Image 1: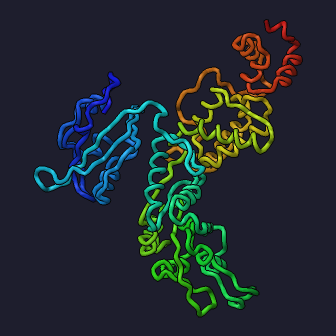
Image 2 (image 1 turned 60 degrees about the vertical axis):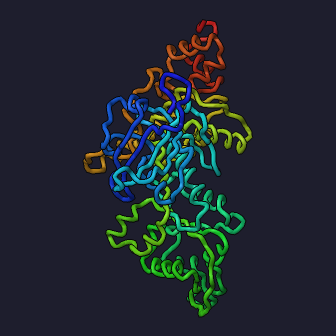
Image 3 (image 1 turned 90 degrees about the vertical axis):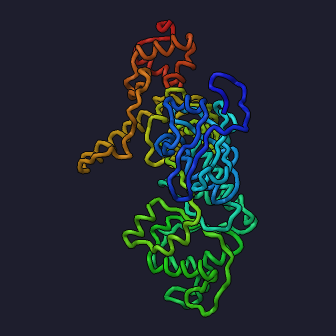
Length: 459
């Protein structure tokens, strides 16, 4: 590990962390380097449980350690983030049996990285520099080499379909078809026909034969979104197709062999659905061989500037005009919001302010109407809902304090004092002052006229 007070590297022959344990069992710390011990801020004794001593490390260490044992391969260049925000690249290696021959040993080597170093900002239209997204990128590459079924979990709007397409495009099936189906967007009566196809006359309205999604995805990948909403009788047929690797269209006596990789996504807990008898346990085990979890946007706020930059570039191309950036106050406003709608909500908000504002820089004031709408929505929602112990995800802001300069008053309440302050901070540049206030220059002149002021009065 790199010395916290030096830029030289220690020899990599000595691991920073040695863990002892077994697959599915507890893991303990057998040895820890002095540098890592100092970084944690408290002494870690041999035999301490990993969950206790390193619970704040992201991604969690135990799944990575067990991956080394199950795959019998080392892991390299794994981004890790410690609770104090320091970031490392980790290497995990199988250390063989422990000295007592009762457990396995896994060695962890760490190298500190500076902010942004070694990070990948975009991957198959997925954007993120955070450790959580770097782990998603790693798993996409890892799972693309397999034909095993994948389940992608995450809240609505986190980009699960982008992950599914990335797995397909990284795999050897990328030259084959990629077919997607939202299981909750099609009625129960038509879902089986869409999945498996039907013959002409199979049911009322079947005036011609129809190739199902499985047949169309042959040789490629089939993405089943919102699979947790699939009816039980359709789950039964799906399980049979996956086990026999052949499909029988509705109303047909012919059987079609298929070669399809299944990628599923859900925003509901499949384990809970199994417990409630809403999802077949045998199908659950059949499709959840591999899993990727997409974190909500509120858990990866450092990625918001990257997403905003991409959206501004996209909207500039679409609308034929350029918006360079957001002011620091506007960006901090977005990063303080909890984003219950995740990336989809962020995209919609950014398009709204892009359309409503024609200044090259968008300030915090441009979001004032949206902020009021969210606050009113939350207030009405709370009034209609019974009390709850935990805050609703729709809560617009977290408790983090914001700068005193971030005042989101309506434009009609723009004060002379605020205008003078912006004008002085911009050294008498009226255009820069307007951008700082988050309004167009012409709008600023209208406010000056309303206040019976001219540019000379501001000086």
